[in-house]
Image (cartoon, rainbow, N blue to C red; front, side):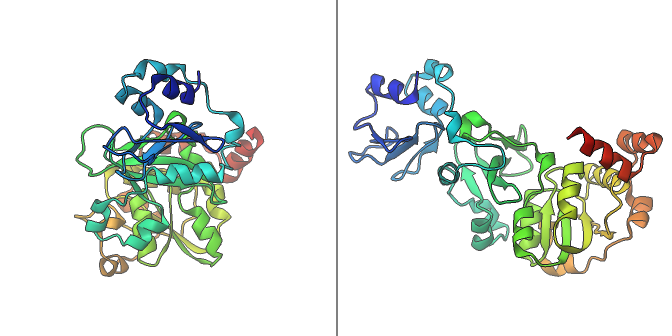
Length: 324
């Protein structure tokens, strides 16, 4: 059973009609109106009202209409609508991003400019109260969206990846991509690159005038190493978060991939680059990676396994590439 058939049979959406091959419009069920301001993509199930700003997915809509039992019976997304993980349909990109177009006030309040938030396409999911971060591949294609809690003190998971059933795009393996690498590549300038853990730290450094990418976790993967080495750059600097996870991840990264010219230490009481002003950050001097490990490194199972394995970086990369 397809989504349009369910909505049409229910008779609950006034003036429902198809609009093009994959869309439909109707009078919005979330506010009092007579004009068809409600638009829904029948392939992805994403919908939004251009009048009142309500937005969500098909599961939410069916539930709110008392039709939640139909959610599991929907036909799968048409395969021709999505091509592959690295080449998403531009029309789907526009629709997905439109659903989260609202600018998150909390990031403006802590100093992010409207320009950088627009450039990074940062949005807000008001239903889950999450800030949304689109993830793009090296060619700039949209490959996923992650939602992040408004504050670090929020109960439950800090990050919420959006699945294919919610946004029509399979969530990617983050370890296969470097956040913001496509912008660094497009600029083509051989600048120093600062590699950070999180989305906000990357955006903040870009706003301050630095060239930056994010690992989206606390340690560099083999795929990310290959992407990084193919970006135009001068020196490479690792900027771990100032916490146990950041130091442990940096220790593993530096041991596995001796490619960094220095490590920038975020001082107390700060946790990440976006906690600091431009003047404060510019005062920081990179540490030699060997000195950093002596002073700040944290041994873990990963670092011990690497040492016991006694495999060189070149041998590890060769073996991984043979598996591809």
